[in-house]
Length: 368
Ligand SMILES: Cc1ncc(COP(=O)(O)O)c(C=O)c1O
Picture 1 (cartoon, rainbow, N blue to C red):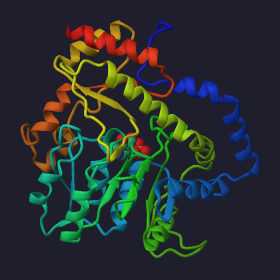
Picture 2: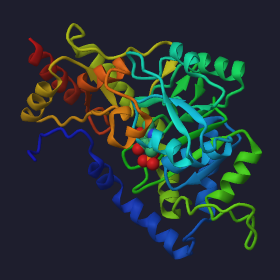
Picture 3: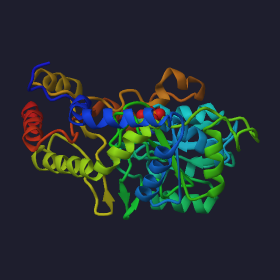
Picture 4: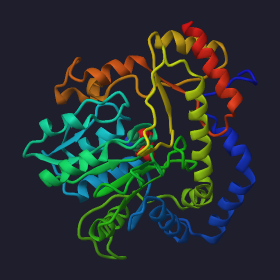
């Protein structure tokens, strides 16, 4: 890779900056022999409660397990239906399928989040949860979803995997649903150096049972009421997250600055991206534009030293794994159109304004 190449993500630059500190943290965890569980986990859960304005947090091994355990604990069982969108990372839907429930898809709006106007039509007497996905670090329209949840007594489980610290009407991701589920995968804004995730809730029963389920279902050393999983957050990951969470606001501030620079420089005659409304505080886990000739633009950017990604090229209802759900091409027009038009530009905190302007100019030039 040429030295001035701007990669889509640059995790190695983060590692280089933090190398000494992280090695010290890892050494401390190993030396204390806090190899499974321990103080770092509790410390992390306390911090997450503050960030999400919730009462309880449970540190887990992934965002996917947070969703699966969350769905189970809000009462979703085999044969039930869960409303969500086909425009997400496959894990949102995998968690529903693994419970034995059926994902019922609702198309998205221009901002790639669930179109709340279409939800009510999909509610049936089998609907046991609504799972909005707060894609890209932007919270779905929660006021409408909350009113439907109240009207039909259907709990909300937030897929907030990409959205730690994002806000809607000043309230943080994870604070709206019965359960909020987060990922701390290395690509997330608050990232571990391996798989990690967590859930939050205000419900003491869900909290107690999630803690049991993550650890074989054990109530204490010898008793289990129901069989559980091995889904604990690794202590080394928790210790690293406790260090990195101190920087989270800075990381988000930089990503927001990068978004503002893009907003000023990208030519919106050719390039669409959703604005940030005054009731939103978006965290730009990703910055996704929608354009014609997406693949050609991607090639052009790559040739000119800019890495990009596509989140996500295949809508979930068109994946082979979703065949049994009997959806077909054309069922979700916005999702399918976006899948052909979306391109994720680099926005991570290691990038400076000059680089963002360079990328913007390249994109503008391509459409000239
Ligand atoms: C929207 C969404 N949901 C769920 C997940 C699953 O999280 P994890 O990879 O930590 O299992 C991710 C992240 O990968 C995600 O982006």
